[in-house]
Amino acid sequence: MKTKIILQEIFYLIFMFFFCTSAAMANEAEEARLVIKTTAEEVIDYVKSHRSELEQDKAKLHKLVNEKLVPIVDFKRAARWILGKNWRKATKDQRLQFKDEFKKLLIKTYSSSLLKISDEKVLYPPVKGEVRNGKVSVKSTIITHDGKRFSVDYRMHNKDKDWKIYDISVDGVSLISTYRSSFTTEIRNVGLDGLIQNLVKKNKEFKT
Image (cartoon, rainbow, N blue to C red; front, side):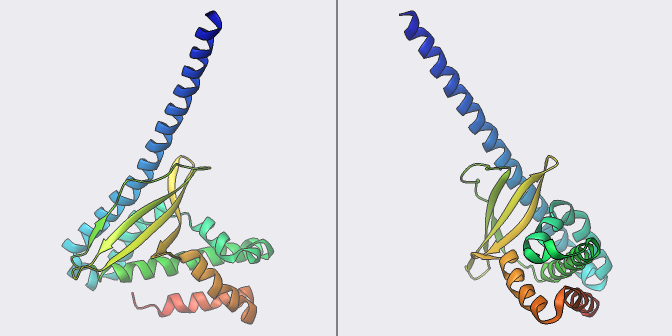
């Protein structure tokens, strides 16, 4: 009888351990989802109410992106994954230059797309699955005015107790994979320094 009671207590403790662990993971996943949802809604609402002002003053548009988007993106991790083996071969200066120019490119690209926002609806369903090794995928669905749907998934990891985006997929197409394929070919043709200089040129020519 005593053995049975002890076993019951052990199974109860095991159950509570897994329950509490799952609850903690669920809370972490929800935190990640709220980072995406809150940031996106703040940016979109601001753009809609200040569109003409932002169209006239691109510096304000870039400031908005820098203040709202940049803090939740891990550009170094994204840059490292995009370059892959070329990151390991790169010097410290090359890594820094590539990361900075790639960051500028994303900011300008994102800023340009913001001005095209109209009456799209964005849904942020609860995160399915658990946080694994500090990583989670946050899904969203964009519904256009004519009913078309696009899935946008954010791959995030917990860095220094903050959730950061390191990859984005649109309808299953990964930003990291796309850039990796393109940049690998470019590095093969002109080298890493050539790629960096091409990014510098592209950023200077970017209209937004």
